[in-house]
Image (tube, rainbow, N blue to C red; front, top):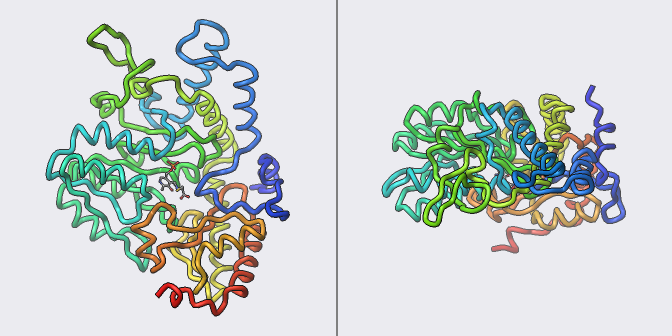
Length: 418
Ligand code: C6P
């Protein structure tokens, strides 16, 4: 049985108060909280065997190298990659996508080529492609979002695929709508027109089983900090054949095999893409995070979040002055609920929540094109769930909404903005 109270015991921060009230943390889509298991693994590294990797021939360096390499093996298994050679560590999802745009993208995109993304992308999977398109004189196209179902419009996908894009970059889960895209289907269709496919897994990898061989994507990007790991470590999965043929972005230590005065040869994958001293602490922390997630079980986490989402949507539906965004079909919905309290600015909502000890996010959520389509003020409030959240916390959020509405009722927000 899923014992959320037991899980919560593992997260020291959840015992904290905020504004003098027991903390309700509903902002895991922004970043997740960390269990002792991860904090202790990082603590042990610094206290017991801190040393640089791939460099020292002494016990501590061997141990840190081993732990770091094992973390890649674990990531490999976690996403079912073929080899740890396909696992490149970066700082976060953003850096992973930029790395692809700046290396593979620079190589394959030429003037007049099409790059296809969607209207529900986070800026991290949008601006790097805008920059690439600007550099190369290429054309950036968008798959439309159906604003009734909050899913990708598959007719629009087909229309855009007729232009034979060279790269298709799409989010697995929207950080605003919670929509879970049918990424396997999109990848299949994109491959059929000859495109290379990058999947933004920032909001999927932490919450559900993601299998790169099943999806058959060419690149997958995700962040450690959203999946119980530390900040500053993220991952780019890349298909080995593609990575082999792609030039590295940075030069320096560790990415080379040999160096002469006027030439050098590259190291093997994945080190070719990891110049300089790595985020060793990050790799070790990510390994612990995945061990912890595996112990709970990704299917259990997904199911728990689905129950929370169902409960939250039901509670929010009871309030006729609240609008929620995102699919109602829970089979294609992750634990993210963006909402609007009629007439109340999301920043006011977040402030009242804060005074009640509840952390949510408000604003454009780094997805301005999408959020501008959703509301005239280009901002929404958002609660997001993870393995440690409880229904009682959703009740606290609903109470905060009721309080907010009482305070701001009659405040003609849109009138004020006119
Ligand atoms: N979204 C949110 O509150 P980084 O910052 O690189 O770790 O992750 C970027 C990113 C990329 N794609 C998606 C779908 C995301 O949701 C995010 C991060 C956070 O929604 C912070 S803006």
